[in-house]
Image 1: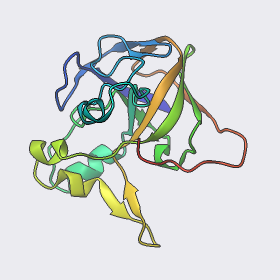
Image 2: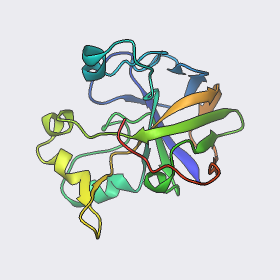
Image 3: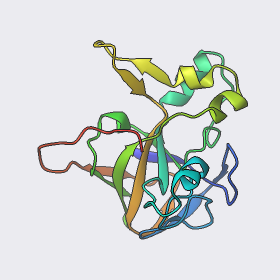
Length: 178
């Protein structure tokens, strides 16, 4: 399990610029990223209530999603769907809420929920929103666009750093959109 790409953007644009390393700040998010802060920064959530806590400081996506989307004809690569951390070998969507994700030797993230795919995906490329949504065997909606987390311990993360996972004690709480 490892970090295969890192991205950030100081403005609220759809895609983020890839980089070799990121500075994670405890309780805030990623230094230099538009979503960094104690209170919510996502525009639609700011409009609803700008005082709510920022549960979306860091966006993680499993790298295995990229070739799946490419094989369906979408032009996507690292940073395109606004993720901060692209992981390899981690089943992010199956993690329970409050899971601790260790990136490298310093950074600890706490999983808060699922990213809810938004219309910006279709603004980038028609049909992309539908491509990151699926149904399980029971017909329940599956959001494949990654998970969100907050920074519990800060530090520097570099591409290639290892990832380790600490599942919280039971009973586990399923991920919901945040």
